[in-house]
Image (cartoon, rainbow, N blue to C red):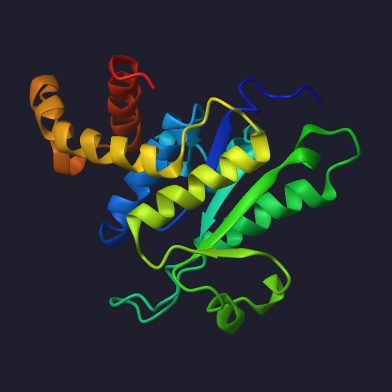
Length: 209
């Protein structure tokens, strides 16, 4: 099977899609692009006829790198039930890496597993024991550094700046984003993933490293 286009640059994001996590999600997307990669996630396509599971399989197959944040492990206030999307998507990514035939592009997949606390995962997903889990302590600055270090260490690209530099640029970008949206006639508080990624990409073109 041929390696998908941009496979070496594509980074799959598996994280909570809720208001409490949104600023961290935006930071991940920015950090990925500022490091020279392409952010991918389940929200990049809006096709009512496309099964979500099939879409996930296709996007994961396209990505060499995966960033998986398991910090949303509490119960939903409305249903009283836990949400299992993040562990499921992590399992899909790990399965693609583990069970692909030798020489297949998915054998080279690299993943970063995140949580808000270092060893909390042992309580709700103990089968990950032995896996290195990175803690961000719900800090955007720490999160940006973790993402940057993961991409740098696994790609060895000299063009990737320091985490502190990327975080500083993220702060500048976020401060400029409302005016950018105003000029584009977009609503800052309701940007889709694609619209936000466009904002990031165009800002980076105007503000290269």
